[in-house]
Length: 173
Ligand SMILES: [Cu+2]
Image (cartoon, rainbow, N blue to C red):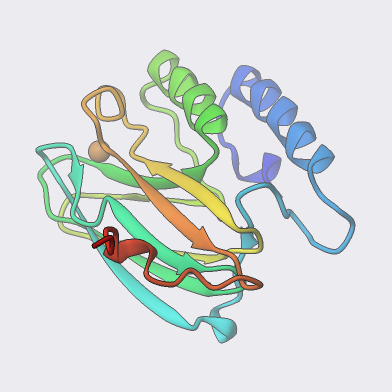
């Protein structure tokens, strides 16, 4: 569970407890840890692997990712830089709150199913099940990185109404 993975003072635990409650309030009874952004995926159900490089110019190599509702995606996050980077999935609000906490506690070790923190030259993984259509934000919450624009957006197409031609844009005459 979330709280057990936090190895730090009581303050971030308290903050995370608050967000855990917020997440719990958003579930609808059929999932474990489900939230507005989806839920932790099972490795055995991975349907697709998406590689994302993280670089010291504070960018993700794939800042715009398209998936389908119901997909379980393995994100392989490779740190191509010289400093620590991370890939954290969340709502914009969750990311902002978490980032504010990271600014206060720069050395904080944090880990959960929706994120991976990756040392320079290493690779980490997030396996995520996209249960709802809409958008899921992701970002690097290392101090300074989020502000510098190290963020991206996953668009989750509805399983009920497949998006067609939406990416092709203009077909007027
Ligand atoms: Cu970063």
